Length: 220
Image (cartoon, rainbow, N blue to C red; front, side):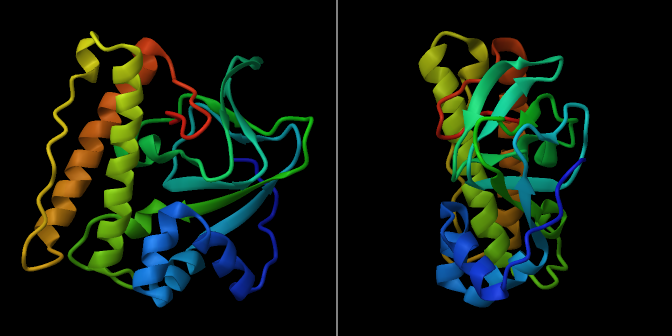
């Protein structure tokens, strides 16, 4: 994947930038050290105007968060066909990460604006495991709860646009949290549900086309 070198920021500056992202706020509030640990396993990238950041057909374990600027979701055969627009705060790339499928669209920086800044997290360190290493069970649960929320919202956008389509009739059953607190069972349930939702969203992307709402695009 062609990328510019990671930006050189101090640990404090990096933490401040990442903590501003809604996805990571709860982690920072609960345990600032866990946020620092996650940052240490991540990268910050600068995407030059006109640069292709992600290409269709690629696979990878990275999930991305746009921190500054704008990125275009493009038809891989014709970048003049803009399918959606990513704005600061948007999450992208998570469908391919969760399902293991290849990415289906190109992510390109527009030529008319300055560089875009992207925070990239290696999702491999967040995979459910009995050996949690440097990231705790609670941190992983926070991440998976966030991902489930995002995927459910994106499917809801399809439900609003295509209310009679069979693929949008997804059972949005809540995953009950144990009264005993965080559990391995909940983490596995969250992971399984995220996989189910991501697979369904991938189907919707292919059959009905991605939906651009300028707040969170169904981008794989």
